[in-house]
Every structure is written in C-alpha cells, then in structure tokens.
Length: 432
Image 1 (spheres, one colour):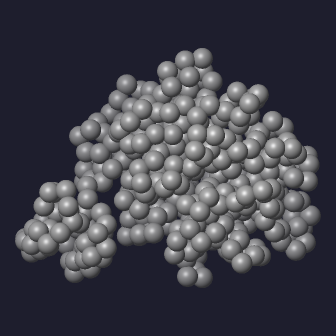
Image 2 (cartoon, one colour):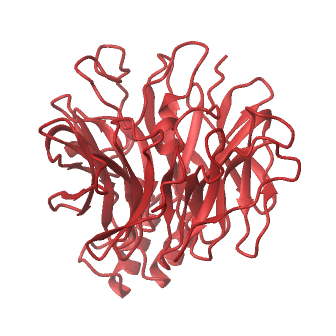
Image 3 (cartoon, one colour):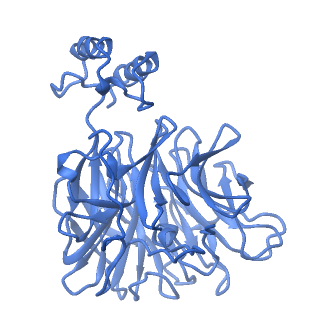
C-alpha cells in the first residue's frame, strides 16, 4: 500500500515536490528529475517497455542552456513553454521558449543564483521562484513574475520563506505561497499589483499552512490547506474569486491536494482513498471523481477546458510514468507516441493547453533528462490542409462511415455517434 502525499515541511511548490512524495514501498524521485552525478529515475532496466496503442502524439525536446538537463512545467495556448534548464556550470535557471525555438535563459533575481518557472500565460508572462540553493526552497526563496523582459519580486521585503509563484492567468493574476507570518507558517497568496494578498484559511486553522497552486481565467484559485485543528493533514481547497475558502473533499482518505482549475471550474489534483493510496482526482459539478490508475498511485496535475487531464502514475516497479486522461479514459503517454518518440521514457506530464499539447520531463533516446512537448494531430483538420473548413467534414464522414480507427476522436475504443459530436464541437469552434 502506498501513502504518497506531501507533508507540510516539504517544498512550498508541489510541481517540484510532487514526485518526491514518500511511498511505503520506495521513496520517489523529485521533479525536476536530476541525475546528480548518479542514476536518476527510469535510467536502468527497471523501466517497463510497453506496446504502442495509437501514435497520436509527436514528441519534441526542450533544449538545455548548455548543461545536461531540462524540463517543462507549462504550455500556453499561444505556444509559450516554460520550465527550467541547467547551465554548463550545473546551475538551474528558469526558461521560456516557443515550440521548436531556442530556450531563453530568464536568469534570476539579483543575488539569487538559481531559478525555476512554473506557469506561463498567453502573453508570455512567467511565474516562478528564485533562491540561493539548488533545491529552490528555504529562507531565500522569492516568488516572482517575469514580464516584458523584467522581473517583479513578489516579496521585495523578503518577509517569507518556502515561497514560490505557481500559477498565472492572462489578466496577470498570480497565485502562490509565502511565509508572510514568518518561520513555521506557509500561506497561499494572490497577486495582481502592489503587495500579495493572503488567501483565507479555514476557521479553526491552528497551523497557518496553505499552498496556492492554480488559477483560472476568472480569478478562482485552488490549492491545499491544513485541516482545521490538525497540523500535517492537507485538504484540497478552492478560493472563489468573490472570496472565502471551501473544502473540496476527499476520496475517503485524510489528505487531498488541488493542483489546477480550468475555465469551467473543473479542478484536478489527487486524494487519498480510505486505504491511504493516492488517486488522481477530478472535482466537477459538486462531485468527486476517482480518475483511476494503470498500476499504483496516480496524480493529476493539469486540465484544459476540454477536460483533458495530464499527470503521472507509479507503475508496478514504482517508476513514474507520464499519463493523460481523455474522455474519461486513462493512457500511459509512453504508449501514445509516434515514430519520433522511439526511445523516449516520459516520466511526468505537468501541463496541457487548449490544443491538447502536453509538456513534462522524461529521458530522450540518448538517456538524458529533458523536457518534452507532445503535439497531437489537429483532430478537426481531417484533410490535413492546415485549415479547419468544409473540406474536413466530407473527409471525416467518409472515414467515420468506413469505421477507420482514426475517427475515434474521444478515444473510447469505438467509432460511434459520440465521435461525430466530438468532431463537430471542435470543428464549429475552429479548434483542434
């Protein structure tokens, strides 16, 4: 039985800590994965090779800054990608890039040599953290936003510790965590200008431990917070834009964490079962849904407005494997790559945009830890002429009538009327 969740003394931003959660069977590696001079995750014969189900994604590599490793944490609808990469010296810096382009070294805040980025909006504005230490947390950690070629320090008085900015929307609203009350506390915050504003705690919270993790277009934020009267347990929470805090509930266990929220108000993260195992979780329409797993514990990290969810799960050998949920079905992303993905080992999927592109980190064919970008074909451009128009309808219906597997757009394993609805929803809105 695995018990895989974050305690209150781990990193203040779970994109770095998620894969570092403890398990009764074995400790997990920490994202961003690193070799640190030795073997890192999935570097040996412990990796389970799997057969390709359907080659729907093409994989591209996120370049480094002259060092050995890179990773991606988020991708915007406009194609901006962010994350981090190592310099030749081994120092990690936040990066920003467009798909297929070079990685831009964002540098760091003055006096803080290390940095990492966790979120990016359609304008290319980036949210992240800087610190003096390579693990990017502790008394020096400073949250920031990078906009128009310059950093804005979101804690210029350096009042906090264990701080990071973890989410940003197109209006420039940032969500993150900081220790505004000093050592021993971590508080979720929201920022748009001026000073960051603490998000509310539960009545009866004696711990002052909370983490802001996601924000949608309407300013509704999500994260997790200490339970009232209990230190060490986490509750998945939503912070409505109008104010307040609400417990989203669990799958029967004690702990849960919310990681992301889409424009429809759907929230994803993970929750403990009554047995203590973690499962990727969707909170939607007032209900809690267990997204399941393909082996051991599973974790959902990002969701787009179509309801496509990405994250990772632990396989039978306790290795992280990047995964995606499409139409309610779960897939190991290692089984969904085209020929360009030969040799890749995808470890964690951290972000998905409205085009269905997915980013994360894995090992390339040479065995190096690299960020990846997965791009699906445009499902509504069925004649592949680069446009979404009337010509696609005829091609799709001819293929659908013949029962061709490529027309199973919702990936439920069958070619039926639901695929037609799916196609027309995409086509009428001019989306892929």
